[in-house]
Amino acid sequence: MSHIERTLILVKPDGVARGLAGEVLRRVEAKGYTLAGAELLVPSEELLAQHYAEHVGKPFYAPLVEFMSSGPVLAIVAQGERVIEGFRVLAGETDPTTAAPGTIRGDFGRDWGAKVIQNIVHGSDSPQSAEREIALWFPQL
Ligand code: DAT
Ligand code: MG
Image 1 (spheres, rainbow, N blue to C red):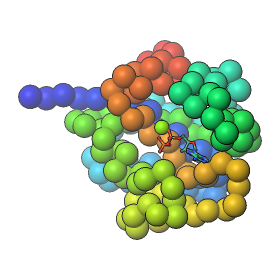
Image 2: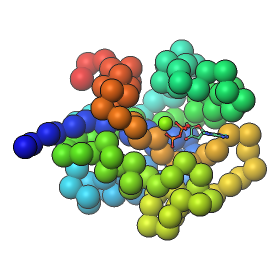
Image 3: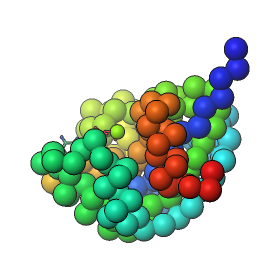
């Protein structure tokens, strides 16, 4: 049965600053997913507080918000069968030091000794978070 999903992808400030936005889009499109929205913006702390609500109170929360608002982010809505899980696989695991080669984080990420993990991309982790996050970043979609 056809079950087309949408997911929110962010090329984080480290990815945009390093010129990896095109590489992320290339991998998403090469995999066969389609783009339903894209916007370059510097996210506000209010938007980030909602986006990262699950992490409020954790030791890395303040550095995470500071990092994510430190420069432009490319926000993307991608669409396709099982795209939520599919993009998480393309991204690789959270820690770029151990993310598998062949994944975005594994190929381009590393530990920079910062207070927060800088790992190039975000991808929604479930259908519920995808719809919640898309409504935050793209209220018009
Ligand atoms: P993911 O982005 O893989 O879904 P997450 O939702 O658990 O991971 O965390 C959000 C981001 O916060 C993550 O991409 C990097 C940062 N982060 C997570 N855990 C961390 C930790 N223990 N120390 C520092 N930064 C962390
Ligand atoms: Mg997450």
